[in-house]
Every structure is written in C-alpha cells, then in structure tokens.
Amino acid sequence: MQEKGTISIHTENIFPIIKKFLYSDHEIFLRELVSNAVDATQKIKRLSSLGQYTGELGELKIEVAFDENAKTITISDHGLGMTADEIKKYINQIAFSGAEEFMEKFKDSKDANEIIGRFGLGFYSAFMVADSVEIQTLSYQEGAEPARWICDGSTEFEITEGNLAERGTEITLHVNKDNEEFLSKHRLQEILDKYCKFLPVPIKFGTTAQEEEDGVDEEGKPKYKSIEVDNIINDTNPIWTKAPADLKDEDYLNFYKQLYPFSEDPLFWIHLNVDYPFNLTGVLYFPKLKNDFEIQRNKIKLFSRQVFITDEVKDIVPEFLMLLHGVIDSPDIPLNVSRSFLQADGNVKKINSYITKKVADKLADLFKSDRKTYEEKWTDIGLFVKYGMVSEEKFYDKAKDFVLLTNTKKENFTLTEYKDKVAPEQTDKDGNLVYIYTNDPDKQDAFIQSANKKGYDVLLMNSPIDNHFVGNLEHKLEKTSFKRVDADVADRLIKKEDAPEHILTQEQTDKVKVIFEKAINKPAYKVEIESLNPDELPVTVTMDEFMRRMKEMAAMGGGMSFYGSMPDNYKVIVNGNHKLISRIVQEENEEVQTKLSKQAFDLALLSQGLLTGAELTEFVNRSVNLI
Ligand code: ADP
Ligand code: MG
Image (cartoon, rainbow, N blue to C red; front, side, top):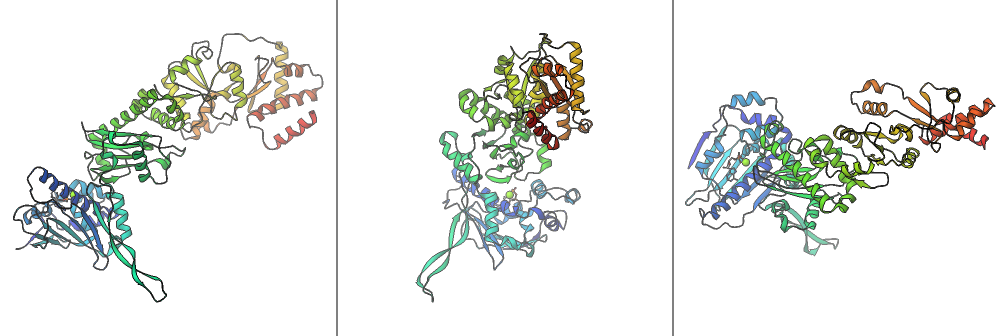
C-alpha cells in the first residue's frame, strides 16, 4: 500500500501562514496533540462500554517523549487509532471553506487560538514547531492494518503501511531549527504542567534520575548512573470532577495549595456544578484579599474537559469576581477561546450570571447559617462584596441583605439594622437620615469623640473601595446621606430644629470674627462664629463634604478636574459658647487676645494634622511661653 496525494485545501500555502502568524503561542501544539490523544482514549473507552469494541482495553496511558539527538517529540496513545481511510478523512481534509477568506481575514491576526479554533487546525498546529510530522496508527477495528502518514509541511503527504503492532496512535514531530527550545525536559515539563496537569487520562513523561551503581569510582566515591523514570505528570481526578459529598474541607484546602503554592488558606469556597442549560463544574475560592486588587486578578483557571485553556477569564467571569481563585471547567466553552468569540457567545453570558448568583447565594447562606463566622471574615469578604455591589446591579440586589456596616466600636450591622439603630438620633429636621463615617479614625479622633458625645454613631469606611461604596449607598438608599465626621462640627453634622442658646451678644460675635480673622490672616480659612454646645472644642477646622468629595474624585481622575485645580478651602468654626471665647472677647490686652486666638486655632489644626513646618515650631514656642 502506498499512496501520495495533496491535502485538500484551496490554497497552496497554509503552512507558512500557520507558522508565520502563530509564533506567539507555539507551545500549544502540545496541548492540541495531547488532547487529541485524550479524545482518542476516551472514545475507545466509550466504544468498549457500549460493547462496540470487545478487545482488551489494556493500559490506557498517553506517553510524551523527546529525543534531543534525533530532534523529535513523540506523543503516543492507546486510543481508537485510525485506518488509512480515516486519516484521509480526518487529517487530509482540513475542514474549512474558503481559504481565501481565511487568508484575508487573518493575515494580520496574532491570535493563534482564534485561527486554530475556528478552522479546526488542532492537529496542524504541530507544523508550528515541526518541519515534518509522522503518524503511525492502528485502528481498533477488526482486521485493520497499521498505517503511516508523513507530511513535510508542504501540501504533499504520503500514506504507506505502518509498523504499529498495538492499537493506538503515535505522532512524531521532527522539530525545526527555530523551535529547538521544545527539545528540553524542562520546557516540555513546563508546558505539560500548564495545560495537561488535570487531564483525565494518565500522561507519562519520561525523565531521568540518578541511581547508585555497584562499585566505586577512582576517588572511591559511589558511582551513579542515569535511569529513566516513568513519571505520571497529571492528576486524572481533580476535585472539581468529584461530588461535593465525597470531599472534605481538607481536600479543598489541599487543592488550593496545589494551585497556589505560596498563598494563605482561602476563607471559603463554592463548588460549582450545573448541567443545564450549559455544562459547568468548578471550585471557586474566596482568597484572603490584600488591598492590592491588581495582583490578585487572573487567578481563575479555565478548563474545557480538564484541558487547561487560559487564566484570562475576563469575559467569562464577572469583573468583580475576578478576585476569586480556583477553576472553572466547561465543555461549552470551546477549547480554543478567543476574545471576540467569547464576547459574542451566549453561553458565556449565561455562565457569567450563573456564577454571580452562586456566589451571592453562598454568601447569603453563610450569613444566615453562621453569622458569627461571617462577621469574623467580614474584613476580607467585605472588600469583595462592596466591590460587587458597586460594579454589578444584580449583585447589589442580593448583597443588600448581607452587606455589613462596621462602626468605630467594631460592631457590625446590616443595612436595616443600622437604619433602625441610628434613625432616632440621626434624622435631620427634613426627615433625612444622616450616616456619619470616618476614613481615618486616628486622625479624626477628636471629631469622632464629639459625634459620639452627641449620641451619633460613626461608621468605619477606610477600605480602598469605601469611597465608591458610600456614593453607591447614597444613591440606592432612600432619604439617606453620608457625611464624613470631619465635614462639620458635631453640632452641625445633622441639621436639627432645636435653636441653640447664644452666650455672646451680636456685637461680641462680630468682634470675635474680626479678632480671629486678624489672628489667622489667611484667605483660605473662612471664619464662622457658631453657638455650639459649650463642651465642644472652642475652634474646629473643617472641609465641606461636597468640596472634599469632588476633590477626591478629581484626584482619582473622575472627570472633576475643575475641582481638582481649586485650592483647599477650610472653614474655621469658632464656638461662641465656649468659655475660652468669652475670655478672649473680654481680654483688654490686644496682644494676649491675638495670642490666645492663634493658640486655639493652631490646636484645631494640630488635631487634624494640618499644622506643620514653621507654623508648628511657632506653636510649640508660643505654648512654652504660655505655660
Ligand atoms: P479536532 O480534535 O478538533 O477534531 P484536530 O485537528 O485536532 O481537530 O484533529 C482532527 C481529527 O483527527 C480528530 O477529530 C480525530 O478524528 C483525528 N485524530 C487526531 N489525533 C488523533 C489520535 N491521536 N487518535 C485518533 N484520531 C486522531
Ligand atoms: Mg484536536
């Protein structure tokens, strides 16, 4: 038997194109060939279980080997094999229509996956690294003859009698000059680890080890020889393929360690398992989040029937869930994913909302069944939940029932609980709720104490996402606004009906204003005299909530650049009811009057960390003198 022919595609130079445009992803040739071997193995198993193959299955191992001298890589399996006719059918006829269209469309493409996936060039990816490729195969079918196919990368091929004695297929790549990097144990091991670590059929990769030999060398040291070690490199039954009921916490934790060797234990996990309307399994872990979101991304690994595809799951997993770790396996996601394909794929959208729902359900569950643990983990979970609420409407709707607000006393409340708690004291004269928060409890301590003294609760909002989260809640919650605790003096944070008493006369009030303006003598500080509680500080420096937020947004590039360019403007609130202020009005020595005013003002600056440099030095000297 000998036959020559031409691979039937409509253009002569498909291989140069494959080679030229696919350079960035050369390594996937191994993924393609090994997964073909897996497919062939699964098929023979299936035929056997259906009774359509009655012979021995034998040991269904796949072997990957290489020979540095011969410059070959060989992939062999004991799958169903092919007859010469099947080779012609499955290998020779590259199944796509319109090679011209293909050439036109992809002449600038660098996305190997797109080309390979779209045009079913899985097997042909071998030509990315090989000058010539040889297939030796023997079909499982009764009376089948071994067949051999060889092709040197042109469109010419040759089919002759083969030499395999056992059922299966052996593919040998004669690696070309440019791709000799793949003739290395280290490199092949790396690729196998990346793509084939969880394949369902055992994969043997021949490596060498040192073994002690009899006798000693000239120096009297023991002699060693290199031996071949049969090394199964994959775990054929990774946990996501098992039933959750058969798994212990330990199994999940071990698997996590296997995926991310240097990470802390995850907080908890979700085992995904759907088969309708699409197929999806997987395990998603909630990691301990650090504040640096970016490095935590792209940790989810995407598989298709246990073949690793990518860890860029951007279009499959909702943006905020990219902080999760773990694996997703879906045969409904094609092996060769490309960005443009994913965006258009209906399954991907469904997967997206399924995962969002599962994650929300898991959190709701944990909250309901074990609130104590949930609260303990809240610092980590919180970042993630808030991120989800801000970025995904559907998630907000679910999470609003289990998101927690934490106050400065480290007490946690749901949105409803918090509303009930603060409504009596923190409703203003127009019936609006005012939530007070701090983003820096140390720096704003004086303000927090004043607010607490008035019976107000102060929320802790000091995580990186809180800025957005506060804005988001304000937008969603009815008649509720947020004020940072230092946005105003405590008495004025929430506008109430009760008219405060005035200790100073109008004339004295005007006088105090002039005294302070003169003493401070800076246009950025606007002095206002207020009749506050006598227990409040004599002088407080604040920045308006609105102005501050606008400036913060401008700083984050939020399109408020107008505000960004404004100088910082502060209000100096002088408490007309404080004893010190009465003392200043009555002081006859003008020098002492100025000194006391400046001292009170500097103390206000000091409590906010606004007093620095020469002014701080002057304050210290003045204080010493006053003592
Ligand atoms: P796909 O795997 O998407 O079908 P490939 O180009 O990777 O496309 O393979 C083409 C066909 O060649 C396969 O569908 C299969 O019929 C046949 N084939 C490839 N490798 C093997 C193998 N190791 N054993 C048996 N058949 C194979
Ligand atoms: Mg294939």
